[in-house]
Image (tube, rainbow, N blue to C red; front, side, top):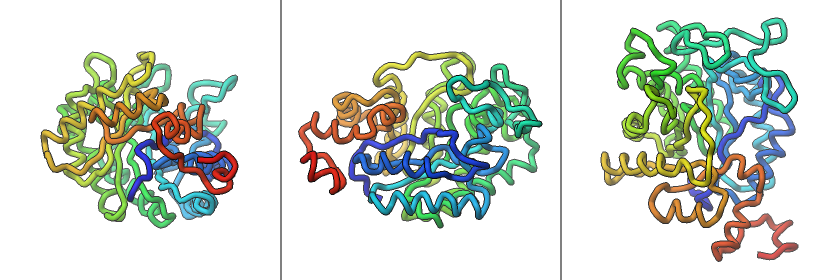
Length: 351
């Protein structure tokens, strides 16, 4: 896969699905970015299991019906843009079954009689004010890897160019990695090797079914920002293990296993990306794995400097893309390049 630019749209939950089924909103949302000159546009966290949704309104990809609905969205977007399209497959773990965070709406877990369900996790440790999850049994872990692989198989049939495994933000795979959420006594807990075991098994299962001529990515955290939590040193080890298993793109985000609030600032997570990238190149100077940075990078000069200085191979925009879905056009002009515009726009605004 060749990206026409080193700026991509990060997965962003929309909470606009119906029983996990993609809607017209998703085509408009993704299509807007695809026509805006981004080098890659990745769909939001898409649950591999009904009970793996963050909210009852999250996307899913666990049945033929869900596959057909998402395929229709992709057909619509591809009709107007040749931008590479990706999907992030996920399980919300102990953060599942909550109300969508729309302004003015309720917060916390959705009651069972209103469509909620029991969340599951690495250990029965609650996140914040949420109820403690049910600890996953040993036999259920293989089923999880299988569910991720099935979702990846469906994504490949739909025609996505890129697949990303979600192991960040305190959701299921992230919670296995973090000592704050994982105190298991079996081989899936304890030292780093044990805590990495399930996420690595999931990646192996997905890599086995995801076409080898299409890139596979993993999004994971650089830190829990909390003493005794997931650290950048552990993230470096995890990154080298991912690259050794054929992961092509590493998206370094942060947080999610602790309720501690960290105020973001422009480029605040770039040092995490740099440390992960440096660790990959120390482990294998010939590595082809790319590292993408996130974190308030919607200033064209800051984004360009992040790449030019070798801190990352590309940058991801989330909220910055929502604020400016034509950011690549603005960046091109600021940096003296020619914007990539669809023909119906280019003739009118010029390039």
